[in-house]
Image: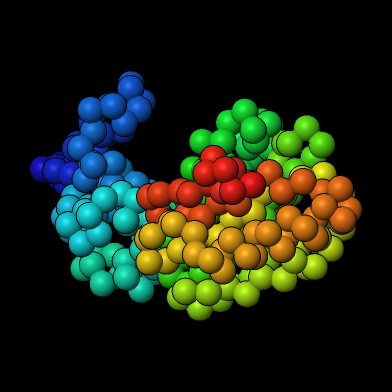
Length: 229
């Protein structure tokens, strides 16, 4: 008597067929998570893990923002699955970065904002980063660098280092960015002081600071849009 296939294989096949037909349109969020998990856990029903991850972290973004250790608190999620989810997240971030390399930053500020939220918005400690642009305000190839990592509420920034790095990369303009781990993206007085210091240092070599973005996982504050640059 032939063995019957595990029930989840037919369900998994239907999910793939739906995805090939119309992407994630019509998918429940736990079904998207389930489909992602099948890439790392191919020989087991992963619907329970998908639903448990959704309940534990609240959303797909919450799952992708979680640390390895946090992901592995969910039963059935081991090192391989946690690593796979992080690979998916970093691939999405790289996609946004490479897409930004082809577009003038001033014409598509939303794309850059989305990129920075994906890149650093989920960090638990504050980091300061720079995007280096050419004279047409397009992102240079591999033109994003985290210059400083700090504590939960502060990352020391040295304007001289920002300018020196821009010179080495032959950049014509910059976009500054840092995250606020507490989720409040309103600039502090220190943020404003640092921004003015970097702008003044950049002006000495005719380098333009296009914007300074403060991000969390879900929000962005733009110095340029607020009239502070």
